Length: 271
Image (cartoon, rainbow, N blue to C red; front, side):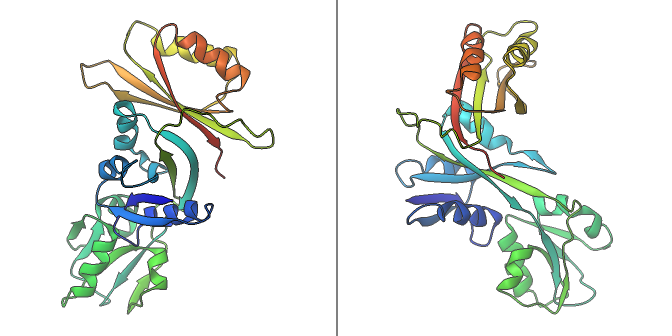
């Protein structure tokens, strides 16, 4: 199986892709420089893409959800990766700090203690590379797991603002015509889109009442602008259960009377 994910090597995306790959018989990993390119790799260049969809601190990854509206793919799995960063330096008093912009936001408390410029990079790997090339006193924010491959003169471990920071990833593929029958011993989650093609007052409340009436537990609800005009939104929803469960089928049947529904997939619920 060919797995595409966000590169370069050394990222949390690589960890997630490898973790998912270990569930397969064999796999090869390929890196792409942007999320849009990762998703476009399916199906010509890759069979599966592993992409981040939500972080505990930063919230949802909007480009991924927006891409599902334009081109629905089938979500076949999810997993969470702990996000731990360290501050590494070549001198006890660095004059600059290299940090990927998302990493900077997740380590703001530690970085705020340094009255030096923060040099934003495109990736955590680039931050590490620039530090290694620097001849001046410098530091970098790097993933904790990268310390296994490198040694540094000065290290401050676990500098994330939130002790239990995690990023949730999903594995997606080209939508299959045949739906796998649910395993009665497996806890499932279902992801779907409600497309706002017939906007009217109370649209969201109506849909929430339908889910509540059938006792379908929603675990995520995200509104995304349609891009046409203010006040119009598509809704990305995750709920407990499989799309073939009677309660979910009944709820979606009613919702489809008013709006277009795209089921992105039912998959084993991650830990």
